[in-house]
Amino acid sequence: MFRHVSQVGEDYSLKDFLAAGQGIITDPEPELAQELSRYLTLANIFLVNSGLAAFQLILKALKELSEKKEVILPAYTAPALVPIILSCGLRPVLCDINLEDFNIDLAQLPQAVSTNTLCILPTYLFGLGIRGVQDLKKKYPDIYIIEDCAQSLGTSIGGKQAGSYSDISFFSFNRGKNLPTYGGGFIATNSDSLAQLLKEKTGTLPRAGFLSRMFLSFKMVLFALAVRPGLHYWGYPFISFFKERPVTPELKITRYTRFQAGMARSLLHRAEELAQQRYQKGMKLINELKACTGLTVPGIPANIIPAFSRIPILFKDIAAKEEARKLLARAGIDTSYMYGKPLHQIFSLGYGPADFSQAVYCAERILTLPVHSLVRENDIITMVRVIKEVVA
Ligand SMILES: Cc1ncc(COP(=O)(O)O)c(C=O)c1O
Image (cartoon, rainbow, N blue to C red; front, side, top):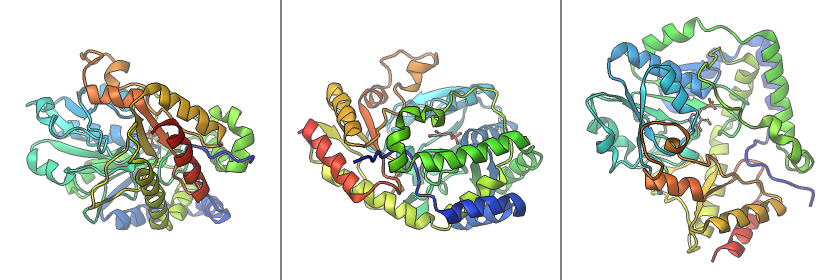
């Protein structure tokens, strides 16, 4: 009653906000970088104002090291990555996904690789682990591997954190991510040569202007309030203020703000607990729903502990997906269709609309369910009940 669970959110405490406010005075960025480095066991961390900014800086660094021009990415992922690749004078090359982990289908990857491949972007969509990520660098020693960990801070594979299986990785602190500070991101690498280049590129970044820093802090506070289920119930119709904006290729890259860095530090101190909660809630949904014949749910291998950003489920029948979304909204649960289309149906990249059949299938049938810290046990029960009413 009078409760509406948002698709994204976090149970921020007063302590998180005090840490954020204190950050304005103390500049917590160096400590945050050190703590992230320890958490991920990756030597070099570079904080910036978004995951996309981190990605663009990585591509610019790689361009200085190689003449190659092609960037391989999954045909179903965040569309905003494509303008970033193009803005660097590089060419996006797509590879179909698999429906177990929603990443690049490693069996089809050889068809996308060429002598002009600069890098491959395996992506931990929804925080799911990537099967076979350990072998990618061994298979393609002359190609840079960039792990896109925007959605997977806290996921572990074979006892190591996502982001530590490649040359370099990037993460996001945006809304909807695992430790959301309403924007921000970072680059992580163990490679000294890449770290040197990125140090040069990030060392001189400007701070965001005073007004935009104030506005960001203000939006962070409003976001924290708006995602609380009691307030979300009333504010739901006006929530578009907080939704992602379309991204333009002219990305403005600045430093991460001190306020957000203070907040991120505070959240990072309980990152393991938050990741565990996401894992347990997600596994409960997956285990309860996996017997439904009308659905496909992600497969989770024993060596992967995903810190789910959300749980993706695929409906065999598209009408059932729409019905489930409507009924879940009525039952107080916000869901998302995510990216409504695969990349080749959004951008002209030289592919036909029916190419990459798994990505097309996924885009048409996906619904994502929330598993953040404001989701309660009863909400999980409601999600399972409503979905089972719609599909057998
Ligand atoms: C898979 C993926 N990569 C990259 C990004 C970009 O991160 P940011 O929103 O921090 O720029 C996102 C954000 O939505 C994402 O989901």
